[in-house]
Length: 192
Image (tube, rainbow, N blue to C red; front, top):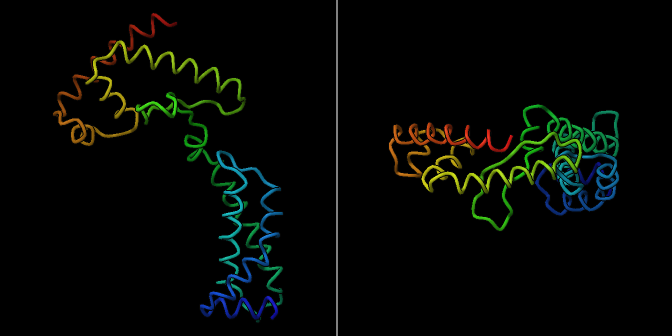
């Protein structure tokens, strides 16, 4: 069967025709994916985006147009990959793609992140080491309650959400954050 016939069957819900198209275009997707770089991702993420592009091509292909399915699919695959790269590099997503965890994966203290420029790996490593030192000092400086409130606060939780997680009143959270700010001020003076 031709690609156009397979696309028509797949569009009507024929799973085998769809699977055959995915197998047939796997090399095309791999070729396109290897030509790009995704910030904060890897080639497998781009391959997945290429698969989405192929799926869109199958669902939107119209045989009455002058383009063959192969041409249309290639265009959809390339555009999907390029769109994913554009979205990953926007300012809105830059925060997520350049975040470096302060703690090690083995540590229980998740949710605290430091943003690095992302430009140079050596700078990211130095920032991570500096942040780990600050994090260690914070654990010693703050009470367990203050440290818990700070983790939730840095994770972006609202006072209401922190209150639910810690069983504290909003006023207690506000007081804890005030104490934390004062202690951070003294820590800042010690480090810098």
